[in-house]
Length: 479
Image (cartoon, rainbow, N blue to C red; front, side, top):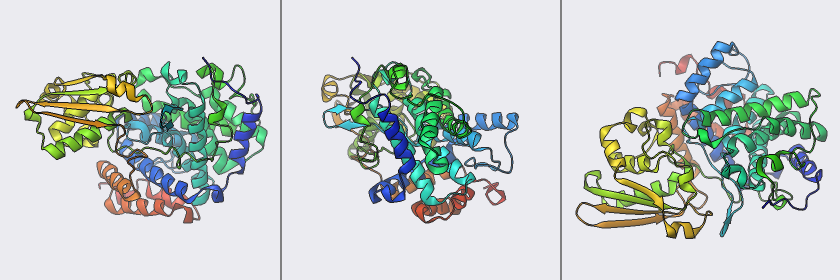
């Protein structure tokens, strides 16, 4: 059954275009600005780490072969050479999502989910950054563009029928392309309503991403292509490229074709009312794995600390969740680091063996280590009636640890650390940023500079000081 309701074919597009065109810095509540800075810093940190990930490294080599890299253009985070905004956004989108360590947003009410899971920063931040840098925009303009892009991406994801995600679309790649265009328009063009609507239409026609590719390099490719699509769409629209001006709600438009319908009440009158960073909030990941693993990982880490559990003492671990979570966590015997990010068995095993699960633990070598393989065999991942009864609005994870001594230890978590109900502060995110920077061998003094620049980004007359701090140069070589 579809959820298409109430809004005329034209009015929703008019509303979205007006929001993009008219939103200014003063429209951002202080709480939204501060929470957005947390996600911006988080995005830049995971981009640094992702720049040396397998997807990031392959893509950078590909761009070199294309001959699109040079001394001018927009910054590719963690690299020395730049590229046009289009390709810089592509590269940075892949890097942000390359380790699956970037933020997530799932709109929930106490009794229901009313939106799709999406990664709001990965498609949007690269566009806001590249557009602001090449247009010498201020920190305020950058902050507005980033928030507008995240808001449009998230509210579109909330509005479209759940069938979109359930049937295999990756909403970060699909809804993200529309949010990316909104960010580019907000920072830069701010053109006519018609051009904005055409830009959104061009972006929607490029929106793509299939969940079958989870656990492969093509998952971060979705985020990179969504970012690139946003810039292509805006560049073409302001040059007169034609497109439908009612792409969201038309009978053959985005909502109908990709989702079979939509709920207008999730987007009409809701853009910035409240802002997504205010409610329901955005989750920042403490571990570089699929967000659905995080409630169980948070609880397992606490059980290990509280009870002093040692891997050698464990006979079996059972993790019970609702039936939707195994649909995404599909690798029960992973062989690569990318597969391990979607393996509940690996995430439990590595916490038990190493006591941590950071970037250094998600490697092909560790995934295939004999002791890790043996521990994964002791982890059962299944649907639990209690977790299922809690509903999809919660990622309820129920853990039972059976020790060789016969002792049984139990725990339950509905949300993971970093979620809006268990949030990270700016200093918490800064610690994660330093971890990512160290992983990329970035000098501590340079990392500290980025943390301070983002903390006061609205005071920057030009975003260039921030992008310069994110580029590789002679002082950072050989770190």
